[in-house]
Image: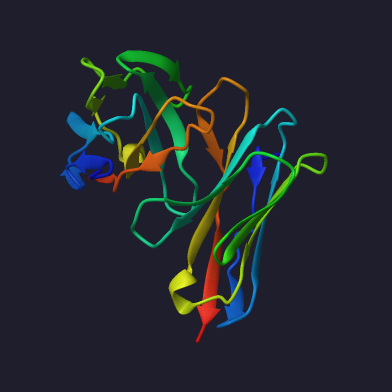
Length: 112
Length: 114
């Protein structure tokens, strides 16, 4: 079992719709969770971070965390073609260990 | 704040050659990380420095790989006797000690081993 799992996609949504991206992780003691966006050929760009159970909103993006279910998600409202990219879920797996463990990413396609 | 920079951006080398990459972190960041990313995968952690001390190394970091951060500022990653399997994007990230310790990535160095 991979430590951080994501559906590889592609997830295709029409412009203006809500895109929902999901991630599960295996290590129960994980403390910090991050969503990165990566355009083809580019490096990961931080979108959101979340540390506590519940929702965290930043503009069109909402991150949701449920530690009991070991589940983190990213919602993108009013999706735009420029949101088309691969979204990487990253987990700081063990307290005090700084390495991030990444999922393989979900490719999102927003259709105009 | 000019962000994390990496040099070179692209490197093509022949199998068996040595290569060295450089990373300059965000100026006030004391932590520096190296990751490797292959096509279709997420980044994989290689090593991490806090100031000049190398505090973590992944099992992925074979004895052909060495990283340094001699003055706690820029870092270098050297790969000796390159193999075709070393072809990947090598990413550097930096962060500042604190409660969130968010990592910001540089543009990466794409290595192709022929």
